[in-house]
Image (cartoon, rainbow, N blue to C red; front, side):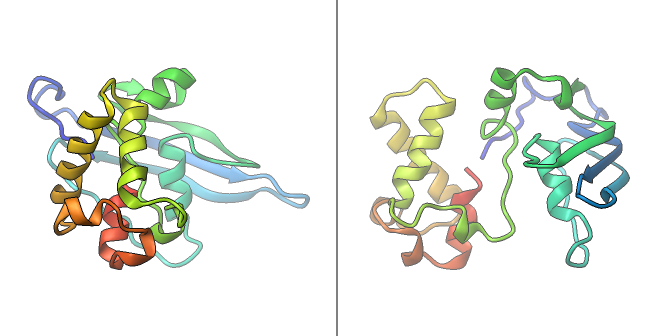
Length: 178
């Protein structure tokens, strides 16, 4: 999880994330499925946005499109996604990899399925930290404790070595956002 600081943040009254007229389709053997149609939104620094809707309304597709996680036949057909006034849709894979997990994270609808059940939770968070930051194993472990505390996983030192199924659902959701 990352925080926007004044030094990093955009100019006052500038959105940190903006989506303009975003449309996403999934190609099928029949007609294309228009999963997201002309969505526009802005998120200001310090704001939180929740997206609610019926099953199949495009919530997950929208969130996946924001970070270019669309798989298979899904593709953005129009619009733009801007983070700190830079188009996410135009970033290189290296730039996108740096953005993911450091500045923006995707929390899946069912976070229990996003954690590897064979690996301890702390190990998974530590690996993510090390993939995005130049830190030692010991520093990553300390940062993992901080992250676990930040997302209200009690007693991070003890829960570090727990497997996903040993944590509560809320703890699973919190840990999978990193």
